[in-house]
Image (cartoon, rainbow, N blue to C red):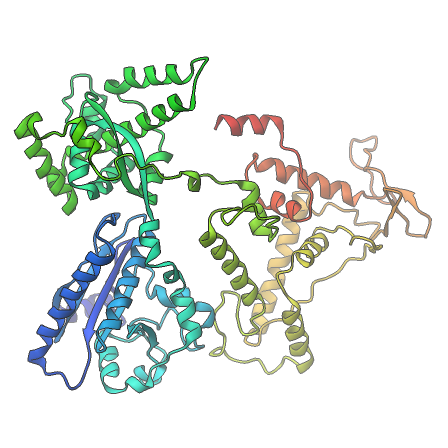
Length: 621
């Protein structure tokens, strides 16, 4: 069906579906843009950039393990344009994506005419990182092809690149503007600081992302990992995403395996932190061939005079069992996988099985390997929930050392940045409900200046202060403020509509509020005494007293009448009882897990005990 047939079939408004990247993929384009460069010289310049990229990778990532695909470039010709292009599937390791950003940024520092665009399935993710400080005209709908890296800096194409229209740019439009009007580009140190925030830890983070661990595996597998350390990545992925077909050799008693648990050796294996966490976090039933070995190690570890050495040997054996199982699953169809490392593993395995034991290393050979006994600290896997809650609440307490608290320095910095961004959004007078700008919406002239001033003053007063936030929560739940008497007068929230709202929207909101109130009353959340109106609540010597006429009397729970229904009319209603009942029911529904009630009460300094039944269920889980 050609384009005219499509238009006739779907209607005049048909547009072809835009091409989208698969999940967890990053795509990058490298252009040599200089009006003085001749077209015949362009290919040689691009080839020079490609070779420099290979050398840069060899310099920084020689010992790095990519989660799935490596950083790679090839020349591409499309729509009359010639440029370097690459796509990398980074899987579960977002660090691979930012490592590519780092490499590309370093590349632009070496070639002054090089312009780089990089994006993923979320779009212009560099602009997403800097969303808090972007120009007002930018939005996710029009930011396509507007972010470029040049000479190590981030440049943004202005609205003039699309002739002043708020629409996305095409790739030819963007490159034409870069070539014709580079002086019109937008560059800001604030935007760069936000967009490149994650690059501050590079290149030191490249080696810091690697984790070494001692594991007990068959000698044949130890040899393969020594020859091709990156093959650990597809093996862990095969183990992590295992399916019944690939597990068939492990669960079958008569199944032939490539790595039987014989001639075991303990060696240091190199992972990334993501790969190691994927192995350690998986619960995996011990294969039949490994059962006797694992059982013997467990009995040794559970012996009366057990030592840390026996526990470590058991942990190394279990980790080695998982890794070996992953390689077994990978070997079932490694030659057919769309992964270069998997195919290299298949070729190496075939060579080893053809040559036999002659190529396998002896114990002396293994002892001569570099870092054969290296074992890094695994404490980064542990989460101290106390420290985590303190970090979220801003109560770090006394530092016991440079790494005390929740996570490492990078994690703490990310938490601080998240809170600061949230506070900046609350104080942003121009942000809407979704954080988007409202400047294009129709203005409502009916809103008086007084209301505008009031709303602006209210916005300015909003700040992410823990004490103020706790006080707001107490007011929302109907609790009196600390240290003062609170009258039980019913307060109606004043709704100040945005400038672009109209009367129809106001009416719809009022209807929705009425429906919500009716539903809350039906479920007993707002089950108060409608006949008595409001009751003044006073705190006297730890007891809650009420009095409409100034005479205090103790509030009692509503009692049932003779007909089994609760008395109404002159009986006082225990508002705190209803509130406490609802809070406890909400807390119990959390089943010992995190939830809104537990979080809010925790911020107020109140800690409710867990239900014993729920606690037992949580321990069993």
